[in-house]
Length: 335
Image 1 (cartoon, rainbow, N blue to C red):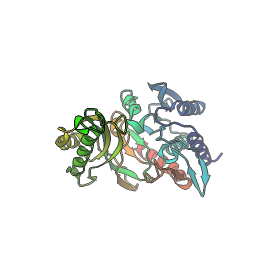
Image 2 (tube, one colour):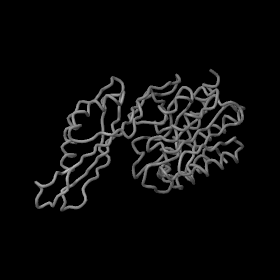
Image 3 (cartoon, helix red, strand yellow):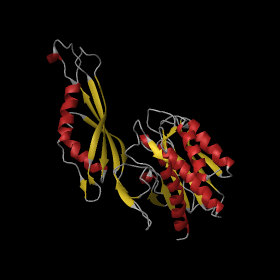
Image 4 (cartoon, rainbow, N blue to C red):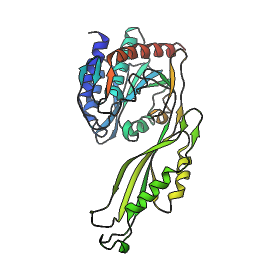
């Protein structure tokens, strides 16, 4: 079968498996069995709850390792092909990338290269727990990590970090007909969020200004009860040290408690000459894989459709990624 058709088939097969973060077991077994069947030495790195990373190599010390993640954001929806696209959850983030990397590795193996590895991770979408574990178990001799995320097949010069913060407010319950007898935690939380909107956040000449979104809000017990507790989770897309953002939030500490949930730093990466480059505002596993060689970020697909209800990957872009990955690895292996 043509390598591109194989990659299309693998992408669709993986998209059809629900591997929403926390539910990666079935997809992991599929990838592990596939690589074992192709003759790779496969190690399953246990992470939590039966989930595992998949690390595969060809027996030689891998100098170049392809890597991406196989968990996805919710909600799951299966694959379909239409108008030259593979549509489905994870099509570009990052199951099509995984398929392209395996196809590139097979192309390189057919050309006689064996000093390659493949590292496929769980948990990237919710704190990168798979990457954290893998970083404690690097093989000796790895020189380059080619990490895959949807970058429109461009190499990443830099990516933002991700700082997830929980703001928690405490109040006192009371009957809503006598609000003066209680303290509304929801009101306190809303006051804090309004202050945060006006806080000056760090900037960087290359990555721009830190921005954030309020992703979750919880609070209260009933409509007719003054709320005794409330919380919100915010994600800051950082351009430097997350501690600078935390210091900027000190202004609301008298209103709410502040808890750091996840802090992944911004990172600048190695780029190989001759490939198109760009700066990206999202966060990857790269900052947590520091023991896996010099990082390079590149993959097919657009971040603009990742996490959406029309996530897709153009088949032409998938095919191009196979050749780009192979060409990049050959360049690195010959350096």
